[in-house]
Image 1 (cartoon, one colour):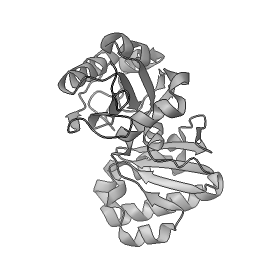
Image 2 (cartoon, helix red, strand yellow):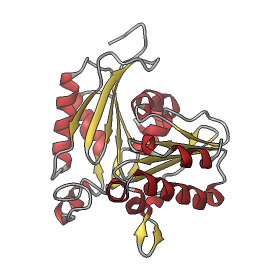
Image 3 (cartoon, helix red, strand yellow):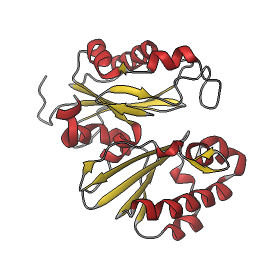
Image 4 (cartoon, rainbow, N blue to C red):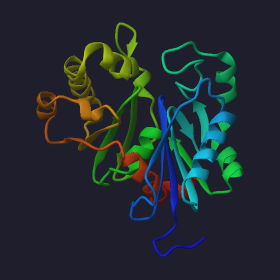
Length: 258
């Protein structure tokens, strides 16, 4: 269908605890209040597809679909996803049957068939980054939520995805575990914010970014002291950026991933 405000995009930001969704026009204006549903576990691919179809039915009709999924996604195919292979959510036991079900699953094709919409499926931090990058220099996007998500762009061009959040940061603990929601709750915002600062300082000589965008649901929990120490090239962006990113993702690389 055609609209004088351009195509309408249904964006679904899939997290460890919930799926956030909205329908937006090309200007990023929502055409109904955003919705959020809890992530169901265990979550095989077919259940995620059904959930997104149900979300689509509850919102205004859209012309295309953008989905951000945690993990390694290549051209809409899931290489690995950290949360959805567990029996009861993040940090619970991994089910080998779910690992097998998600490994190599063409989620883009499955969603396109189920919804009848042109579909784009990317890593959730990449979707977030699409909504905030300025397209100048090297920009790193870190999302602080259930775990740690990342994406980086050079001149607005998305670089190949790296799951460095699974690299060890100390004593066998990964960045994902070190900065994730479970540790924030255990430590409190103050000590957790200092961990974020240490991680940013450690990553700075690796990426030499021109701008670092900190997003995700927990970015707003960073303490004022840590925010001041992060410096002017580090900015905190709203978690809603992922929804706008679903629109801009089509402009940035939709033809390659659709």
